[in-house]
Every structure is written in C-alpha cells, then in structure tokens.
Image (cartoon, rainbow, N blue to C red; front, side, top):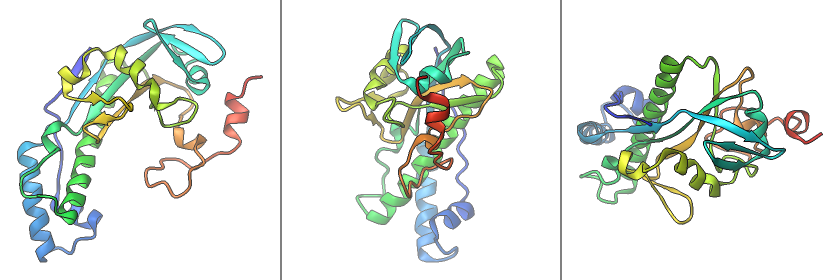
Length: 226
C-alpha cells in the first residue's frame, strides 16, 4: 500500500478567474484572490493505492486479491490483465471548512472549484506515480458507480483492497457508499492496449464531467456475452 501526500496544487488567479468567469481587477476577483490565499495555506490533497493481482474470472465477475467484483465491463477490460492498481484520491479534509466562506453561496461555489483542482492534482499524481514506478504502459481506469454495470455498492470491495483508507488519507465511506470528503474519487487503474472511458458506455445527456462521447454500439461490440 502506498500513501501519497505533499501533492502540489497550482492555483493561478488569472486562470481560475477565467474558468469561473470572474473579471480580473474587480471586487469579485479580490474576494477570489483572498479565498485562493486561504485555500493555498491549508490545501493538502492525498492519495492511496496498492498493486493487486487478478486471481479468477467468470463471465461477469473478477476476483482480485481474494475480493470479487461483479461487473461484465470490468471483467472484459481485465481479460488479459494480471495486475491492477486500486486507488482513492481526495482533495483532503482541510478543504471541508475554510474560514471566510461562511455559507456564502458564491464563495461556496468558488471553493468547490478549488476542491476539484486539488482532487485533479491528486489524481494526476497517483497515475504518474504508478506509471513511473511500475511502467505498466498505457493505462485506463474504472470507478464503482460510474456505470450501472459496476454499481456504487462495490465501493465496499474496493476499499477492502486498500485497508484503512480513512486512517491513511481521511476518506470515509458512508452507509450509502458515498465518500467523505465529497471531492474524492475511487477506482482501479489497469494496463490496456485500447483506451477505455466509462463515458463511452454512459448515455446520460449534458453531463459536465463527460470525457468521451457516448458510443451506443460499444457495449454490444465489446462487452455483450457471446
């Protein structure tokens, strides 16, 4: 198990003003600069991951380090894979409550944007660390709950692979399988010759987090049982 801390987060005021459509030099920009300064003083994103091994496969499930995951898509994606890298990344508890926000809706919106920046930095760092340490080649990832095929209830199994995640990086799994802090992501990196994006199998329209277009033929062509 590897824990990664001291992850740098770049919070450039000009870039963030552009992303949030805040006019530089105005009062909102001054307020945003103050919030960025407060966040920069405490931000501490974290990540945990481990290297695990595929032990068994059935038509719609895969067993990794003694833990069975039920997902046809995950099973097919790991068909030729022997090692995987389960992970959890988070913006950190330090950003749950930042002085000066005090329930103000605009500042809460800005703070959420900064939390996402910290989360993104943690995600990029853990992927880079895995690639540098283990040299798996091209990798893709999947997350429980990103598709109906791999439900969010299987967060429990993924956390089981990593041990005491809350003690290690402060991320707690709730009874409804959500993570706290909210700006946290769990999943599994795996080597692949063909890039995979869960978004390609998701028909949801107008999704702000979409990273790839929906391919309505992909499931039938690659994942449906023959």
